Image (cartoon, rainbow, N blue to C red):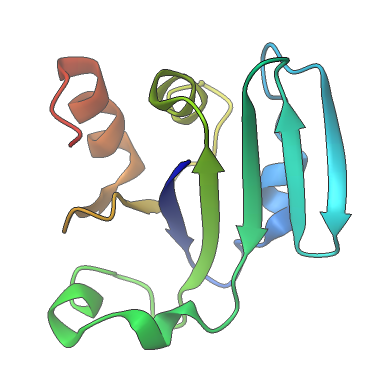
Length: 121
């Protein structure tokens, strides 16, 4: 499985993502108060709010995050194509950043454009 991290301000929490209509989903299952999975049949996407993830970031990475008190949601997926489709949905969160785990921490709009051009990784 692969993952990206969604980064937002204090308003970003697990419910922010849970209430989004995930196009093509079969069902959503809560695994804990801070974690749920979206089932697409053969593919799955897990979302988990991670409270203390900021301690794993280096100073130079933190400088790329424009939020005073950032909140983090780990998005773990089985299909990169599906992840790109989800993040590119018109109804997905706006004003957040995406950490692609390859040194890139960029606004979601820029990440989506990189995905469309095939340069996200």
